[in-house]
Length: 224
Image 1 (cartoon, rainbow, N blue to C red):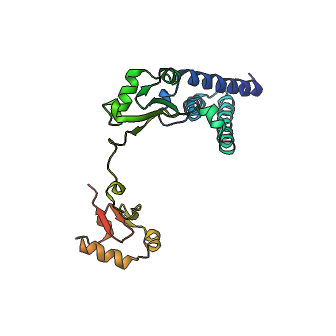
Image 2: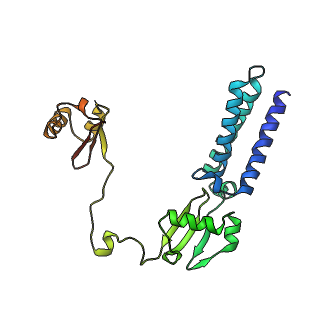
Image 3: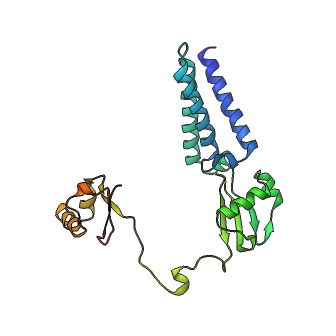
């Protein structure tokens, strides 16, 4: 088979796998979108073939490049034209809303009632009466909006306005001081050494992980 034949069969297999995944539904792909799922399993298979093909390695190499190019092309296409994602990945499907289950949408999503119940329990809902809306996302996950009386209490509900938390910065990793992160927070090695001694450490080498908050609170963790 010549190079043109490999290109054509590669493109054909992309189309066939895409249609098969569409028919099977989204339950198989967990958090991957539809095309990433197809590309992932296929590129892995072709890569394995390339690694073992000693006589004609050019064929699987060309196929691998084709799949990589097509995957990149689809990514760029959906980025430039967001509406195309609906046709490529599918769209979210409302399964339950205001106490009403939509059988037609469940069939469309290839989702059985028992599977839906399991997914609800995985999200912490054992009683469907506690759910206002349940949406089956295109990535195979179930998103649930609880009824107002069942959702967790927020600070706003009781008139509080807590300060916004931020992500802690890593200042020590595996015994190494991350100087750039310290500098970014307006701190230096002398400050760090003083904080280490306050918590019973002689040097950063004794610390596996060190995290610093925006209010300069240092959390240190030993490695076991």
